[in-house]
Image 1 (cartoon, rainbow, N blue to C red):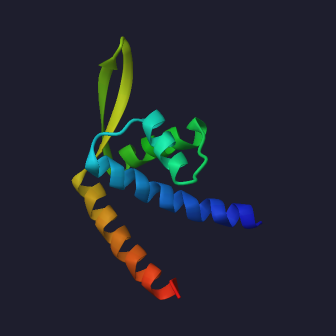
Image 2: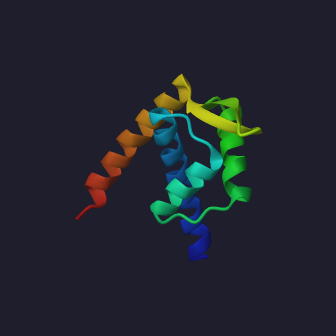
Image 3: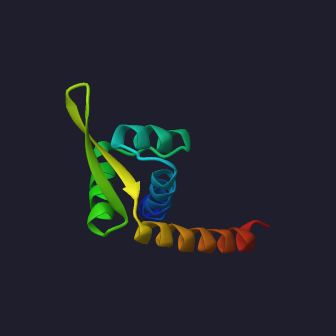
Length: 102
């Protein structure tokens, strides 16, 4: 039970991480998985790529396909809508942190 609850919670955090990094520079799946790993998230490609595709279809990210060493790599950047969602998520996260930090 606890694993399912934590998984749901962490998936929200992962979405925020993706938006944050996609705002800084275009991201791609392998890089994002490694970055998330540095923050203690263990995420499989089978979980990450559907998240990226869903965020793209929801208009939070836009995708650019680039040829890298003869292979197509999908890079994702934040959209205006994604930036608005990120701003709101940050505000809520700061508010929550201030409330629970003690």
